[in-house]
Length: 357
Image (cartoon, rainbow, N blue to C red):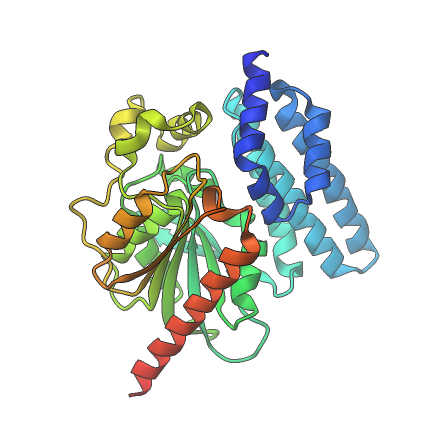
């Protein structure tokens, strides 16, 4: 079997559950993969499907069906997202697809239920970008700030956000430095506390928010959220889903397809040396309550990292490793996603009680 064919199968093996849980049905995803057939055709096949759904969105919008149009635009954005997320052979084509992803989600945002609002965050003389969604109920709400991973972006999370929104929790999915539109700042950084702090400051006094904030990080974002939470006071909680304690410790064991991802995400020549900077050793652990989740069948970040992450949390941590869970537990979303949302809801309630006392 050729290297490109091996790469296609490796991407599918590691990330198909993630593609499905983001909102692309399994049968549709598999049909696109079958049409691609070879890795060289991956980006084109996913982009073609994205344009098909964008055309559906335009038709629905022309007929006055705004919600259908919003969902189709968001789905089209996902096709472009997953078309480009592992496409490193032609970086110009990858960038064009990433831009199309962002543009399509901008079309989707005001049409979603509840709608999403693009937020510009002043940072280091430029702007970071996030998507803010408020629950449908009137009033002021706590905020779950979602930290993406090494190849995920704010456009990937509407399905995840719904678990918080339905519980009265607002969401801000943020492209930090090195993530999505944050690539303008260079590669991923070991410490994004300043960027997260800037996003919280940008929303201070927002009429729909009550000031309670928690961080939720997925995969690489789980690591980044834990480290950031150690430097940000007043958080109601922090969640790390399949994060890690020390990337350098298991770098040699990472699958080749993920090391390719890291080469792009870290944006340096000596990738392994840069990877060693992503460690919680020596950093300050969060004093806010923490939830550490991991899948025992994660083939990217070892499940043993969960115990080290839990021990890092100065304020204590609820920790669980799910025996059947894969990377980010995306094969059991019905278990981990409600658990995270309920845990945060309880932490926000406790924070409200402390305020009232």
